[in-house]
Image (cartoon, rainbow, N blue to C red; front, top):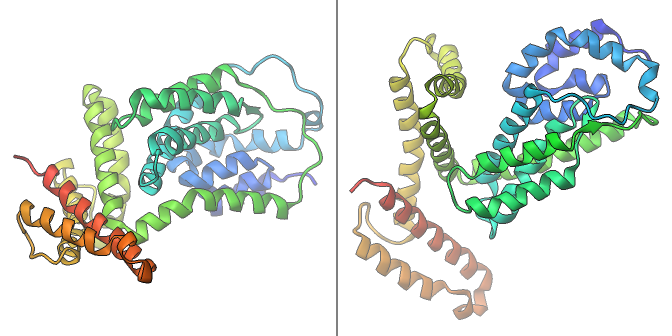
Length: 339
């Protein structure tokens, strides 16, 4: 069935940030990218307003069914920048939701970054070699193991590899049904958002801390590039300023320092609640010295160790994990304080 330009613009206006118009045009990779980034962080959604007529014409072009040229597509700086940016974004999401996994920096992080790069590689009529992209990410990860900015070099390496392996997609075969396409998009969306949602709702303090550490590391690195750093700072503060504009009627007039101060206070409120709960789990008063924290931790670990509580293994395991989490939270906060 022929695609209509008016319908495409309507879907772009009503559900563009979640990729409804791309689903309509059969651009499922682009739709998935928009679902996971809310329309390319809003910028991509606005930018593609002028590209919709060309995409509609391409969707209705019978020549799309014919074999494509074996020559690789032209190098696109915009696509390369998008690969790096989305790779970093996927890495940050993995850092927030999966960093507690064993071997995170060697397995989960390069896998997430590589998949983010490949999603951008598969937008439109192009694609890349997923295996080569993932191999580049996995080989780069050990070099920067445990570094705060490890996501950046992994994403850069994977993006360069994806560009070197770029090619056109094979000619279009029989279209899948809409139900099957939506099913696969839904599975991909759930795989991406479930760890993040779990961490955000069940461990809000840790989520806020990871976000603050990641943003601080990126902005610190960009201090060598003032213009780029200023642009990124405006982009990061845009959701908060928009929220203040809606709730209080003003939000864009304050300076960066005042706005970041309010965001910091918001994050600190979660961390304060987390510390109070940690002291309670360890049976200590607020602000107890480090010696008491160590002593209480050792005693409780011995008390609730699963090997010593086989008759109540489930409860012991739960208490043991809570004690460890409380201890790590307090130790992390102590290390973060300036001497």
